[in-house]
Image (cartoon, rainbow, N blue to C red; front, top):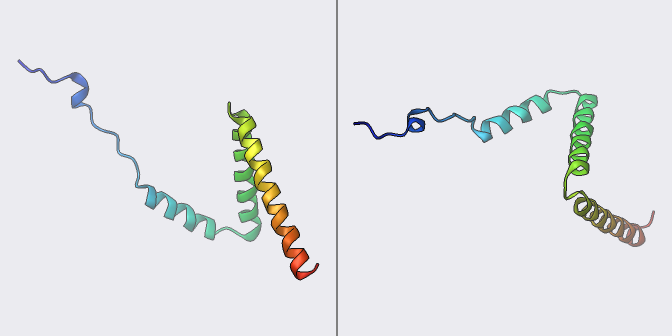
Length: 85
């Protein structure tokens, strides 16, 4: 009598190698015009923003974004104070 569970005979899914996917995306991006590159970057940023807004942790994400912005503004103020504007 065969005691092998039915799911054990199902083939395992094959996922693409993440390194190959990243390399392919990089090649595609390098082939874009400067305008298309900006469009891709802004599209990615908009996607990230929508994802954060719909997240149950949206408030925490906004707080982290605000903190990162405050740090960046402090760096800019320091650079302008040190090197002039």
